[in-house]
Length: 252
Image (cartoon, rainbow, N blue to C red):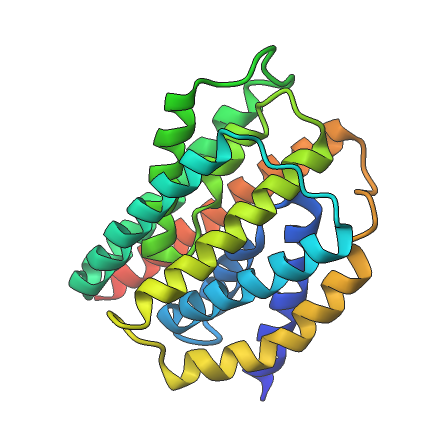
């Protein structure tokens, strides 16, 4: 019971962070759940895919203001290819190799936060189409492995000369689409455990409630403060994920 209550609190925090920044659901929920050890991480990862879809669908419906740049469509296709490779890799990886990958992911997230912090102003011009394609593939690979494809997207989109609403909505759409595609690929390959299903059912009412309350509200921070929050979230979740992986690796 206590683990279930903690999980629902983590879901509420993660969904609010997602609605605020456009990307943080998987990172925050996996970081908190992994650090607290409330449920096995693979089951939480599976649940995150469905939770992200529900959150994105309701968020975008409530705002009714989605503006998708034409470069996002090739990025989405590249992300799907990366997701298929990531899910296939996940089905092959077992034991400590998975924890080693989580450690590398955590370190990569910390590096991403550091790199994002080096630029306090957006780019003067949009990144190239190639940058969007490469980012999409890397995001898909991380999505397939960990249901956490946000960091590459954040690093790219938060540097574009876009306003915050456009960035948030684009990230929300991409993360929701990635979660839906991962779920579709995962079902006939890895499957969806009973615990993953139970966690999803528990989480959906919290997702709906938090999203309905926050989707219309603008961020209560200035763009500079919001970028600082984004970098802090990335760094914190990366450190937590790395530390939990090191702990597992040392105990085996």
